[in-house]
Length: 254
Image 1 (cartoon, rainbow, N blue to C red):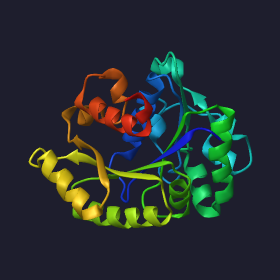
Image 2: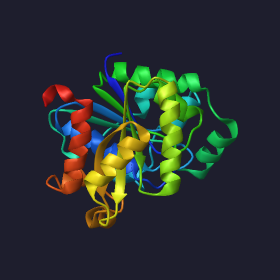
Image 3: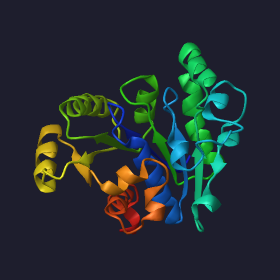
Image 4: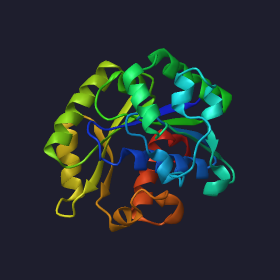
């Protein structure tokens, strides 16, 4: 296995981690990298909606792979042409949004070792530079796996007391799992807060670096997770924030 695993996590839902995962994957692919983004939030999947596949029936999903009904490579949707990626590759590994599949995975569960094997197998099969994992919020066995196998972990949080308390717990677990690179992403920052003050306070409190601070942008509210913002608005402030993250996972090209 040669590619890096990048885990995008938040302690609570609604922080925007799926949007960040999708857009970071797009940025990397546009830079010529071979990238797959995997939706492991099987209880509330949805990253495929950002890629314009909300109504599309998908032949195979991560659920099918975990039930042993297909290979991990069968779940990969090549989004490169649709997203305008020329030199790189962009794959999407979705989870099923059908009520039957969701209730089944919640009721029956799955072997965590199968998910771990899926990570390594898809990196090898697709010759990936990056596997970006959109995790389930909170701390459960899937989250622990995605952290334990990650080369980079971005913990997404809002300026919200519950978010920040959960972030402290997440960071504590990540350190115990010895994740090589851990950084915090502050998302949906209200304009009343000043970036440098937030960065100083958060880094002092959590003893980890702040990778980027994403303001509460009207553009993101308008987009409403209906498309990949960085592809349509390459000169936006949000795209600049995604480039901050890309430079962290790919420092060789700075």
